[in-house]
Amino acid sequence: MIWKSPAPIAPSEITDERNFRQRRRTLQAGAAAAVAAALPARGSAQLATSLAARPGNFSTMERPTPANLVTSYCNFYEFGTDKDDPPRRAPKLLRTRPWTVRVEGEVRAPRTFDIEDLLKLAPLEERVYRLRCVEGWSAVVPWIGYPLAELIRRAEPTGNARFVEFTTLADPKQMPGLGYPVLDWPYKEALRLDEAKHPLALLTFGMYGQVLPAQDGAPLRIVVPWKYGFKSAKSIVRIRFTEKQPATAWQTANPGEYGFYSNVNPERDHPRWSQKTERRLGEDIFSRRRPTLMFNGYAEQVASLYTGMDLMKLY
Amino acid sequence: MSAVQSPVASFSGLANLTPRRLGIVRALVFGLALVPLLVLAQRILTGGLGANPVEAILRFLGTWTLVLLLVTLGVTPLRWLTGWNWLVRLRRMLGLYAAFYATLHITAFVWLDHWFDLAAITADVAKRPYLTLGFFAYLLMIPLVLTSTNAMVRRLGGRNWQRLHRLVYLIGILGVAHYWFHKIAKNDFVPPAQYAAVLALLLGARVFHAWSARRDLARRSAGAQGRIDSPANSSAIVSRRRTS
View 1: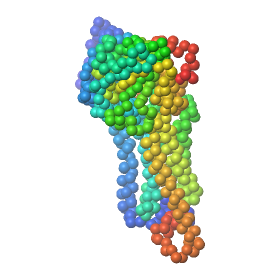
View 2: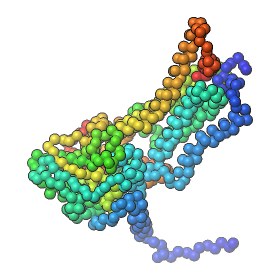
View 3: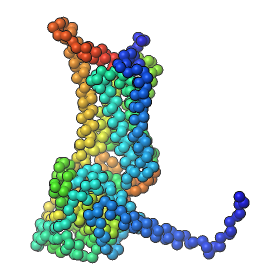
View 4: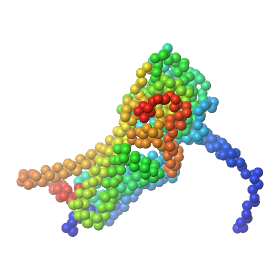
């Protein structure tokens, strides 16, 4: 074999670094979209319907976590406490139609919304948010929904309303996990009214271009990206406006470990582990944990909600 | 037999098992205990560990450490139950395997999970009870590994060796507690409770055995001649004196 020196490369033939990087991003995004489109169909044949949405505000530029990982690694204790219990059971068991959401409490006129009406209440947006679980892992998920504020406005809360409580479906026929006294069922979560009205708080119907898979909280959930994941209640059947701070599921179960606010806060350790770092789903075994950001990186948007509060005490 | 009674080596009555057959059984157990490691390697190489592979590795290795620890603790009660005295010849290997998986578990924690960030690791171990318990369980395993050779058994003398190796009861308790406190706040008691129940059974068997042996001795010395001791009872007394 005779080795020849390679022909010289003209400067014009070299791709500009910016173009090169842009091209890589385009390819990565295309590949991620292809994976996203191919995979939800596998687990949830029941509802692999696409959901159209326009790009919304506040999206991170970080690359979304592959959809098959997000939909196979779930905390949804109504279907079991192992991460793979919900993806195994929920698609077969959870009936998402017919579905209604009762809106009541401190509102001018309590009413029941049908899921089809809720879907049309406001234009759907796609928002790529970071998700940080209290357990120390994180993901990047393209959610589809609209600001929770849109629903709150139409619910017309009274002057007494200071909190909003979200209740998850609790039907033992559909949810085998309810047989175990892990939590005080039904699952309840709550936000302060001003938190719930913040434009980042998303009433969510889909992810990765599809309607929500059962294991991720179909047919509707909230997504509150600056709080630990458990604050984002799934499969909601009731939204209640209250004057007093509601008792929430994890705070009731273990007040020493879980507070009402549960804002992502790297300085405030969980009693059993540090919250300073997190592990991003889908990274290989030799990837290091990454630093956790205050309010999960949304401090610029939400820090003002907590001015003057001691977040080490009001965790 | 030498005057020093080694619980491992002094066993002459290999009830119903030729040395050749025992060799086969030992080889089989050796291979079986390696299977989890091979399964883990296969999952790592094929990406079969799911969304959070480091967590999956830690849990897998932790689980198998506990399983092998309980299997090791099960050898002696099973021997009492069946009279298969050769079972004790598997005990050291099983115990060493438990320590082996524990070492891999800790290696994964220190390396893959924390990247040798010793400041973060020591702060975590000091602050979080479940880590503290796990750390002490592992620490106590070290002297047992170091004194597991025949030479060390001879050097310590059977009685001292046996006393030292009773630490394995404490290791079992600490190991299950480590798992229990890791799970506790999720209010998900079922998996750790299963380990705790097996451990309680295995430790309870020892208490019961000691109690019944003492009762039999008492009856004998009291001259309860009306009762004929069954061979099983008298052999239990003999074996109790030799092993724990």
